[in-house]
Amino acid sequence: MEIFKAAPRPWGNSLGITLPREVVRNEHLSSQKKITVLVIGTTNDAVKKAFGTLKLKKPTQKAMEEIDEGYD
Figure 1 (cartoon, rainbow, N blue to C red):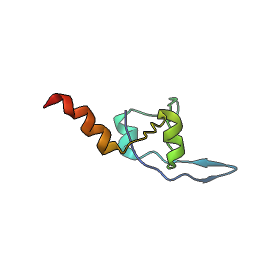
Figure 2 (figure 1 turned 60 degrees about the vertical axis):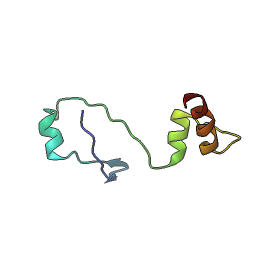
Figure 3 (figure 1 turned 180 degrees about the horizontal axis):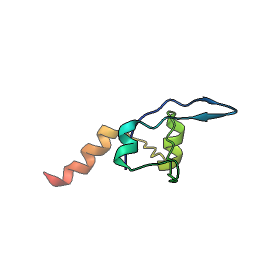
């Protein structure tokens, strides 16, 4: 598995990315192989939808202090 950043560029009516040479070599890729691409957007909304959010009525520091009270 390789992780890298790429900027999509116009390619006809679509967008395309270029795979770095090191990734192609390390993963033994060719035009005949199929790959799976995981797209992670740059907006926080995508992350929130994927992992959810925790809304506390207290500040995080206060909640952490209450958790630590029993371990002194």
